[in-house]
Length: 222
Image 1 (tube, helix red, strand yellow):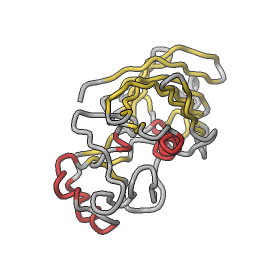
Image 2 (cartoon, one colour):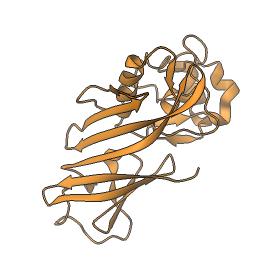
Image 3 (spheres, helix red, strand yellow):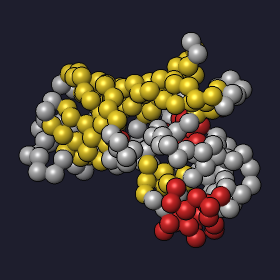
Image 4 (tube, helix red, strand yellow):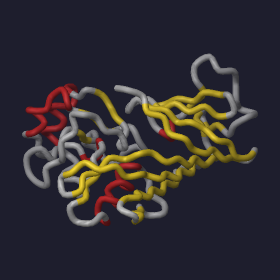
């Protein structure tokens, strides 16, 4: 996967700083005031290996970045009546334990389509946006892909816990329910960010086989 980088802002008790967020679809990387943070989820960003102790510079909870706000925009692929288009997704994330605060807005066609004000994770926030988009407009990222699913258990993390089954496409096309996904779990290609998109994207079925554990998007079970 090729890295993508997005410009944004970081705010905490010491002030506000411009930052660059980088991801390869799996790992997130963020440099703040010359210090590198990395992790597989936005609520799991830790100082990179070998970094001196940052406890006095940043608010860390169990070694993870906390008590701060991140804002960033990224280009976001959609389809309108089957034609690929480019939208823009604005993200506002307050990292404060125990519950992060996430708000997303998709700008497309001169209008803004918003999530709820305090979503608990990217999957739910993107599902909220999909529900309010005009007919014929569909998100085209991993959360809406035919080959992605969450582990069949209650709850999920803020981001990055979405399993990709692009290496077992034919088998996943027949998955319908918890048991089928459990049988395929070890065939996953890895985990991806919900906002990521790759060339192997296919729209998720609306019902039946191929909807896996979480069901059709945006009518998710998890």
